[in-house]
Length: 293
Image (cartoon, rainbow, N blue to C red; front, top):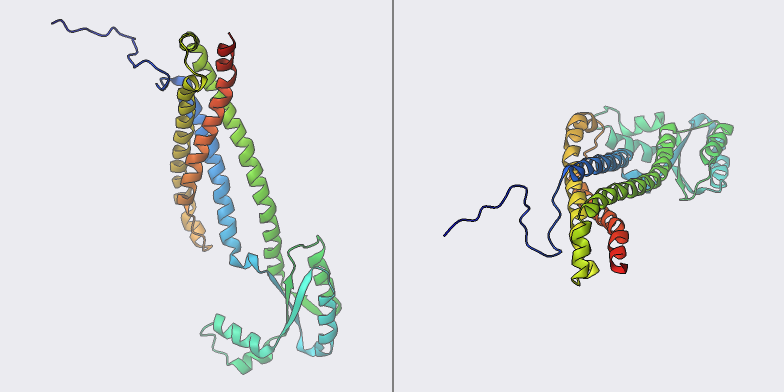
């Protein structure tokens, strides 16, 4: 019995619509471009994660401390009333010197100072709780009020509170940038699959003439788009590890520990969704035109 030899350049595959189109140069280029875009999205959200950890858990309960020298003890009640009158200040708490000394003694373990001795050296402290909605001039109002009665504001806390506000705005910008990149990636995959569709136009036309349903023709291209997007997502996630290794030691000094694993599923499924969207865009016109022919 003679053995049949398959001629060169003949693509042997089973008939039907569920065969994935072969990957070529265009698909590889699209995978690389989408991988770079997803990597940029991953770096963006790693930056947001770093900033969030650096700011710390205090960002959900921000307090500003105002200090008044003990020589100005007569201004305590007036300063407390004026601080409480600021609209965006939720409450004002007067912290005794003994309480502040006890807290500092717990924080500065081994400082060598007794609690009573430390209390004599501490100023009068006011703890301000802020409302969620804060005006642009809130910290300036607190600073001016404290200065009017001879007090001082903890400027480090003010700077961290302003960082919290910036992080909120940066989070919105990160979502907007991710959406724009997702649309761009979907269009890149769409153009790539459109070239594949044009190359298989005769096959698609024949399948439609034989009665193939639209979903049956579109499914392999949607699967290809999902494979492209998911592959780019996994590749982008792997490329995030060199970034972590490069800055890990520096971030550890800031008590920041990046968790790249939480980005695996978002990049994987996000890439797959973007690829499927690009495939739907690419096949919408070609397959529907075949149906109307």
